[in-house]
Image: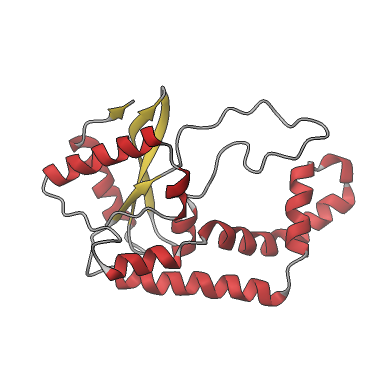
Length: 207
């Protein structure tokens, strides 16, 4: 099963081309690839994780807010502006906001469990592309939202409590770009075996 996730719109053309080249190798090796346009279950899973980045941020933000508030109160100057902004968002949440995020996560897990008879595993990118270049925050300017990279492709496995292995099969512009293999809950050994097979079978792509 091939997953685009919400991060697909942010992927650069070179990374997309590399991913498609790897998928072609899988197809040539006899692997059946099912995409969102091929089966309504896959589309349902894509829809259930379509807000994964925000859902994960809401859950972790709410659950971390109390100890982070203690740190800020104890040493305000020792906490970055970015961390304080994250705390402010969490403290603006209501209990129902948190409960809604939990409901979204639980729904996604139910949909993912439905995939078990359809696909042995899911494959997707590990990131939208090569790691970004960041020279640091500029005083007086808005903070960079994600200066060390976007976790958008990591959010689905976090939502689903799913085992995932990142396989180093691509490089774009001389920088590594990983490919993820994700399975059902408690299938860690199976997913690791599939990842090993891929690393031994597929030819790495470089652009």
